[in-house]
Picture 1 (cartoon, rainbow, N blue to C red):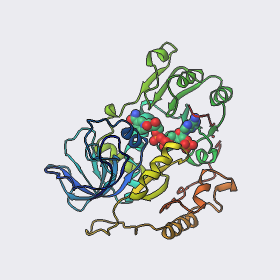
Picture 2 (spheres, protein in one colour):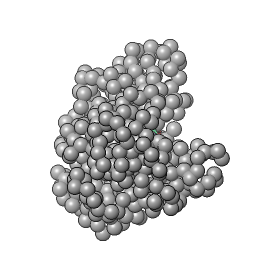
Picture 3 (spheres, rainbow, N blue to C red):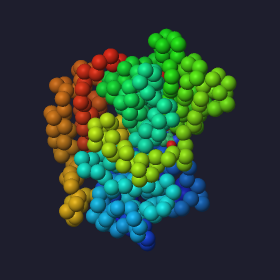
Picture 4 (cartoon, helix red, strand yellow):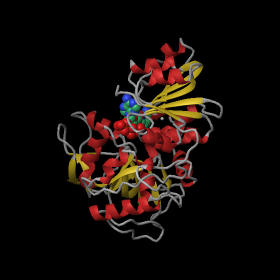
Length: 390
Ligand SMILES: NC(=O)c1ccc[n+]([C@@H]2O[C@H](COP(=O)([O-])OP(=O)(O)OC[C@H]3O[C@@H](n4cnc5c(N)ncnc54)[C@H](OP(=O)(O)O)[C@@H]3O)[C@@H](O)[C@H]2O)c1
């Protein structure tokens, strides 16, 4: 099978021809799409001489059950399924998941959710859902999402918004995108000062996806006594914040109860219900996996990327959606069709030069960057804050 993988210590990842995982007693999945996350880059950076090689990149996937594990999991061969493959990983034509593997949930993809959308959900949507839960976001509150237009932030803004609080987004350069996600207010520069000036009594909760250990301390300037803070990058000194009457929590995936079949199903249902959108900004072939990882590392993607793995049409009747493999021209067709079918009359909405502008230029690799399925571009009371990189 083709896989984007590291052959040995010190080598860069490349397309390798690897054996299909043996998968005895496990789910064997023909991967259709792999979802791209910063964690994929992080794991590459953490490889050591004694790491298992070849090391396939990626965790999130959506595909077709080729073989199912024994047990009462409700999945049959031929079902569309998605999940997190931490052991065999996902930038490959096949992956395998043990039925009881820790932190490797799988679930059926519900009707109404396409395979590429399902691949864009697991890590970031489940993280967003859990962190919004931990922050106890509710109506009448003010909530700040820092790094609001990224993979986790995009879902978090939409989820927070659906629970009724005023949502303030901090972004690096795309206020329009934060507004489209439903943020009421957004800040671009000097965000702590700007949020403080706009909300002097302090906000109730901050989800900080970007600040390192020093920068995150400034969040104390904008959180009211009794307020809450979550960091997804383990930057918060919980004792330091406790001294300031702020409950800080470093979110760890290992302690996320939503990394489960139920959590996967929940975020897919939220997608099917229209509560969240996936914001897939780039769909690339496996050959361009390195380029999209580099783009994620260098910034500016502002949404999700997925890698189309399988170019074969489905051979099972329960596979409900098949999108032909992309070429540049197909990508342009797809893009322009999606554009035409969206509810905005110009792109970017309002005629500005937002972060989607790059997608109007010839794509550097087979690319289909659909614009957001915008439901209501006229969000009332909507505004967005950007801060320099930590
Ligand atoms: N602990 C966990 O379980 C867990 C789970 C998931 C993710 N994470 C971590 O959480 C972080 C966010 O994940 P993600 O998937 O959302 O990453 P992402 O898709 O790369 O998004 C990060 C976003 O932050 C924006 N940004 C960067 N610097 C900024 C700044 N100074 N001000 C405002 N916005 C800024 C980026 O803007 P541009 O678009 O301009 O680049 C990007 O939109 C990553 O470090 C990831 O590793 C942790």
